[in-house]
Image 1 (cartoon, rainbow, N blue to C red):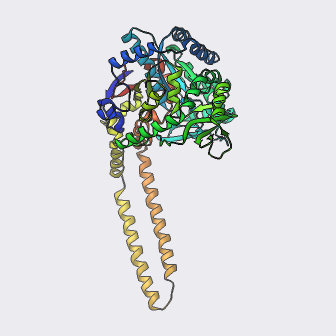
Image 2 (image 1 turned 45 degrees about the horizontal axis):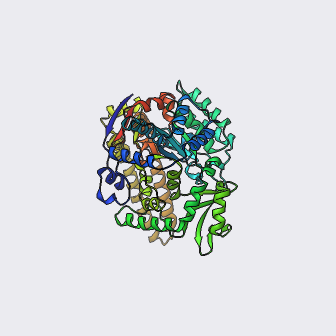
Image 3 (image 1 turned 45 degrees about the vertical axis):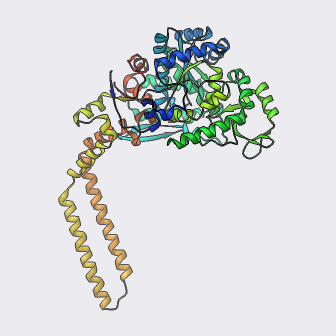
Length: 538
């Protein structure tokens, strides 16, 4: 395994400005990303109270059914004794979802290790599973590579309700069929059967998307001691009761400052990442696992169709007596996280960095500080086969991403075309048009009105010639299928669907090549958070 760093073209202006320390972003973040900020943030956390003991017990109770490794046990004890945390999170996904979920977890782990050494204080890694999310269309699919082309693999069972991922039962037969299709595209290696059996075993033990996600992630990161908590876990919700009360009491103020901050962010040229509105309560009411977004009205709170209506006092009572019936949205989740966990730094992707930029004043309204924002690691994995193709065609990762591989493919295809066959078919078309024109003139002179039929007949023959032309092209390309397939594979592996690899494929595609130890080995690489893109040659 070899590690390299490359610079890729800027695709996110806010992230670029964040790394360059732009003054434009000073109103939006509490801290810059540097060693001084980590020291300052640690001092701040020591000055405020967090119930680490209860938090540790809750995480333990969540993780016990998953299996608590020696390293997890060690970190639970550190958390119980007052350790601070690096936190990152993601919603559940098929086979963990896109690679960036794993990259986030790796970033959380590596940053917690780095800061433990630098600060001389134990920092534990915590992964916040967004099990309360209900947009199942985001998590019900993954991609494989089939015949050198990215192929979408979808879990087809739909829920008629907006149930949370943690409350949505999986249809195991349907999911197993999907997993079989996915592994069939991966192809057989020395690791395939063990990986396949491992996934089937996790499915057998799981009831929901979140269960399956947590079990797989726990196994992949057990040697790193990654702590995990599902946001929808009922004991955790009860732990958050008083925090929901604070959010409700300051609800209108939160909405107001977030709207204002987002307008300022938009004015600076970064857009509106959450499209905040003053009426949004930024809370969901949960019934039977289904979420209903609440808005403030003159009389209190209600969902869009008025099915659920609450006065402020009733909503406060729910927060105090049954907080599991409440759920956060993109605005209140970071606030809740800050109140519940001693967060040294939060690891997020470009999208999260953008919407967190709207929240600084909301943190301050609740007498909180926004934690340090740590952009997650960006990683592209290269198999030996793909790396060899890059060498053979003298291409770089950046060149594949800017379309050079596609251009080379098109140039090659043009170079192998049967020019003579194309020329003869073109001549046939010319003769055909000439003869039909002569026939049309003759029939017109004879006052035989068949022009529509003549045109229709001519089009039919033109279609047949075009069909012949395409069949010749296909036969020619079939002779060069290997070379064309290599260009397709380069694009599919490195820049699938004109997107970064980490946003398309799940890690099992690469575990199937390298083995399940890939995760442990990635965590051992000397990667640090920076504005560079890592290339890992497997």
